[in-house]
Length: 411
Picture 1 (cartoon, one colour):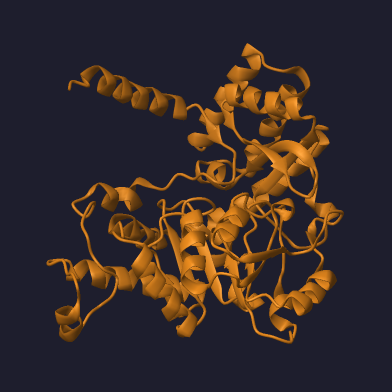
Picture 2: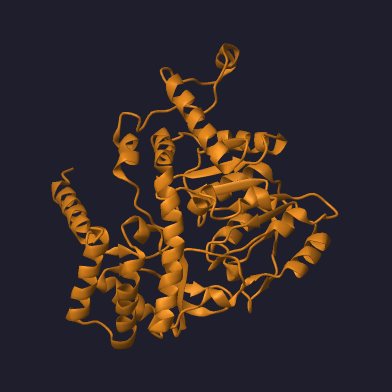
């Protein structure tokens, strides 16, 4: 077989996309661009090697069913990286064998639950992940919604406490993929329930802000396990982590499940997850700037009378790096999504939570990493306003291209 023509097309496509990328600004919350330095292991000799993250004694090795030689240093390095991440998250144990957020959901619940156990989960309509319920149901779990308040866009605390007492869940699972504020769940850890339940928090949308101490740590809110991707809010490698507050029986059960259900560790991106911590001071600046940029963008969009959900109306919880443009008629939201893409502003077309209807989800993590600062916000909001009000024009395209160039060259 000869695929030279197809390979050439693929190579040309990559080159074209690389050129196009320079004239776009990622304005959604779930993509990020890591520094080249931390990606070096991903193109090194480490890519493709098999190894374990468990340091074994000679007796362990002799009794093992399978071993790979020459990989002991990788195992030591990985455990050093785990130790750093345990410390920065305030937990006792970490694993990074998981490849993505949903992969983490599947493996965690396969490992620590039995068919028929009860889970109280944040529903999609309250900002939960669109796939969480399908995963939990497929694993044979009995799932109930956390009750929520659409008016104030948060969990209904009193009803939630009542439902926990009645339903008696084995696990409480908070996975907020959508949210304008970082909701404080401290009450969940402080309330004395009439039974024990294991509490899991997905930090994928908040990880940079948590490790930089701009948000309260989920462990301090009473959660037992934090899981997170490293490539959304954090500009890290495509990878997921799980961190346990305690190195206890539940963690050992989870770790055994991970060893059963995950084969190759893909250690190259675990090395990248360690190297990114060398940029901790930069991450602290990024954390503060992405949140400030989101609030400013929301403020200017409202000033320009672009329909935007204003988080200041919904209490005093910490703002996230999300902005919601909408709600709008479905076709109108889609047309604006396409129009902004033509201008080089890449957003998410979304059915927004809390029964708001359709709109656009914007996020400032990647844009801030690429150079977006407060001085750019007025012009960015103006361009979005003109697109919303007047549609596409060559002049607006040129203005957007010039702004993106300014952002990416720190002008």
